Image 1 (cartoon, rainbow, N blue to C red):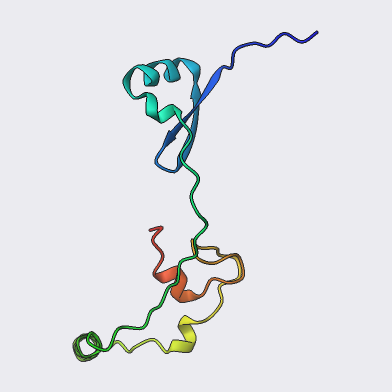
Image 2 (cartoon, helix red, strand yellow; image 1 turned 60 degrees about the vertical axis):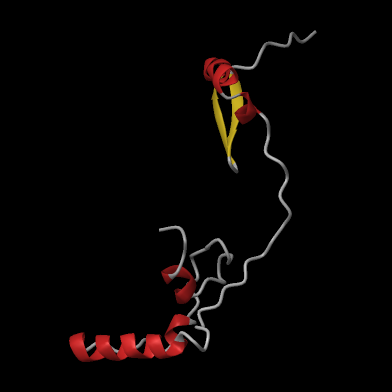
Length: 111
């Protein structure tokens, strides 16, 4: 016969992050903020659509900034084909391994 013992750990949910902590911490959390012990509501699956193209009303400003950078420091605009290069061993929030481009890596929210 198996004897059930109380768990030594407790699950704490902060926003969409799940922490597993010692049970004594759970007792303190239950006193202070019991809502953190409840699992978060399920989220609907969503897919982010990313675009690096500027809207027409912003393009003149980008052109002016690019021209100023080129004249001041001598840098050139990166060719679009370079930014679309696949980085094989990298995954981002929006792309899986083997799908992430250099643009995805440069403009990731994970930095």
